[in-house]
Image (tube, rainbow, N blue to C red; front, side):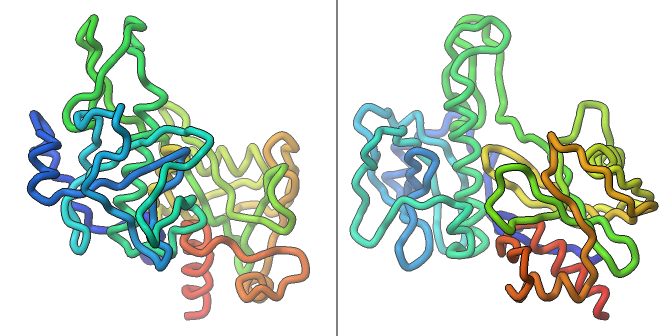
Length: 299
């Protein structure tokens, strides 16, 4: 398989990490930097597509030092992220803008916009869930333009976390393996996925997850590509694994169903013509893995 590109990945955002230390957000805003607002996990987007970027602080009680510096990008300039909280009523937005879920809106953003939004959502979520020091339990504060938290009591520095997840297209000749988790919408199936464990390689995680969920044994595993998935802070490591067995034994705690589909059946799924299975969400790495596999088979 060749490398694939999914939403939130390969956007070309210049993160400028060397400029974070001692950064003055007010000075950057005065020089033309803008802010991407988030509220209740949603991003401020333009109704016609693109990021809604503003130069104003969105919440009077939120000081400028609580802005997270995201970096610079072609067409968007210098951008900070700011969390406006989760009040029941959404904060007002400029005309022509709306609050949107990034999962539902990722195809309305170009590559650098999507990477910028994903970065902001993930880092702001980390701040909201790591207000206290894990070493001593005392409150911590934002530092390094939002890319650290510093404990005011013991001085420990904390850094944003990313959770690695393997997501794998498992093939057996002209077939691929799909599954669905309990509670998913009717007709929704996807490639298998699971969190990596400490001390585990990507290849081992692929084999373990597939065996645990379906009983299928996997041999050769190849890394294909990755996708940031800020829901809340995962990195999807896309892989292709070759099955050594095809008998399925479900773990009902993990999967409600799993099945093998032929190439022609998968083509009908993507075309929206399959009687049971709905197409995967475009922009997701699962969709991209399947499309790439089909193209390679076709060639």
